[in-house]
Length: 74
Image 1: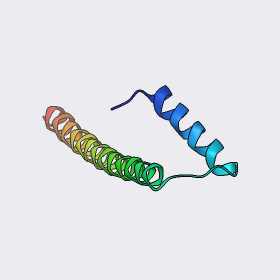
Image 2: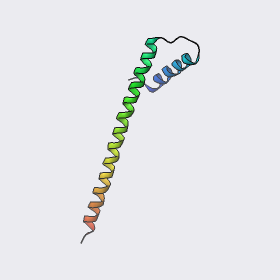
Image 3: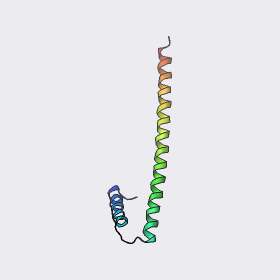
């Protein structure tokens, strides 16, 4: 995986090419599609991870409340 600044530079160069009248090869378009697919996949994985973390936090809160309640009982 490339560094963020490398990807950003690639996108800027591609954007300049698109906004100018320069020809874009099929290979360049396929490369951009591949990068886009990678971004979608990484975003999906990230959302799943965040969802699992939120579920774990909710479970920990519930468990903590149960523990506190059991300690407070005489």
